[in-house]
Length: 167
Image 1 (cartoon, rainbow, N blue to C red):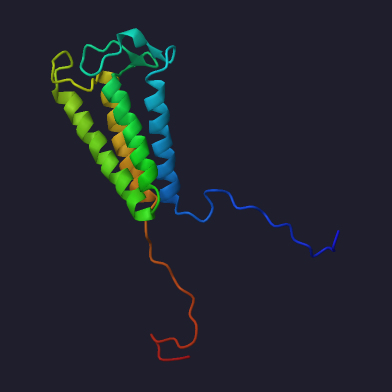
Image 2: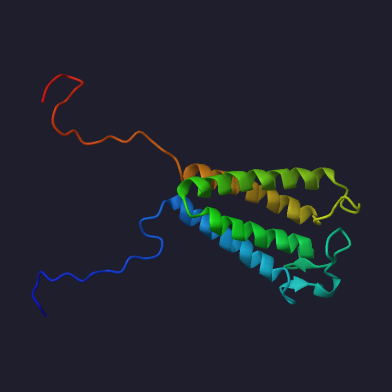
């Protein structure tokens, strides 16, 4: 050992030094990627044989609850890829969370007004999806806001105190 003052250099983790909003956006994106993949996995998605390209006829249900289709799963995958790409800067990560949250709130409204048994239900959505979309939309917007909150920061005074004319 070189001495008692020797320091062990710690390796920085992949998220250290990054804005919180970037890490949160990346985490949300990864969740979307995982959900998109799981929508095709038998056992996790019930009745995968009933999976359709789009529309309310798709009998597949993620976790046996959320109605999914190939299009629905692809949307989740694309949303995840977009999130990873947009998590590169704090500004675009924030835009992803706020914009994505807005998109999910619009999907929630769509699910409320569309007849779940009609051809207009192209994604498809059911009541469970509606509640999930409401929660996702609200959570993403909230995360986009709280992880980028800017407060008044007091900077240390160096030199002349200009407010009082003293140094």
